[in-house]
Image (cartoon, rainbow, N blue to C red; front, side, top):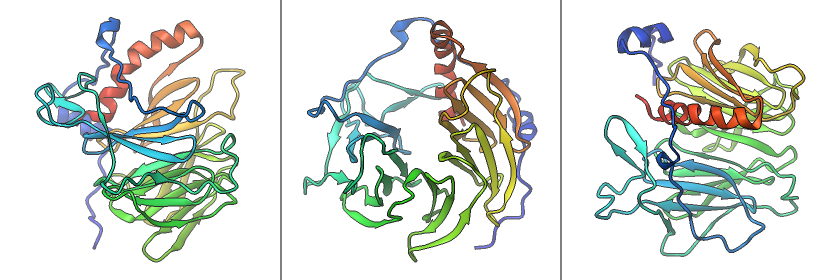
Length: 316
């Protein structure tokens, strides 16, 4: 299919169109926060290593440190007639009013990754969902496994270590194309259908800790464990630029850095143990940055950024 030649939008275009200032929502009352417990933990040594919502908003998927994935869904009820994790009223708001139920196919299968010969204490669990929630791929120090979300069956496995995968992302327009960040700092663009690595990207010095696609800007942003961001062209897979994130003096550079695009596909949220920052990815200009400098500061920032994270991932 021919790629649209429409000029990618910039943040200025979005601001002009919306005509509304983007403001943070501050949480000041503990009663505004709720806790949902998922009563399924029988193994005290197994922890939730990665957690994400389904794109449809009807479930939450957890990858355990033992390599097993479990799915919880919000079922229809009088309290939750839509059967979703969120309600539509002045935007999308996450709710914990209804406890989700663990879901499995009739076969009783579990989505279990291959961890043969893996030291689970050193493994870096990683997980990604396809845009239509049909497939989930994950790894826990071993091969990458592609699961069918309806049957929990393993469709295929690939990329056996070494090096081990450390971050996974589906191409947003083609479920057959995967971006796989590796422990050795490389990234592989892998085509599942033909079982082939189409491109191998090199530009980092430490393991890949985050990947995010923007089809609006035709870029892939990667982050690594040395606080560097790299921007790659989706068309050619060539590196456009490398951008260091600004760290407080004396802070270590070997900490995980995560990246996430806003729904406008232009604003980029960068998460690091020392800070949260927002960039205009069309120019890679930093728009806002909030440091976490102490435990007290962490609590204060958490109040401010709770609303930021909620609006950032759900605003249209």
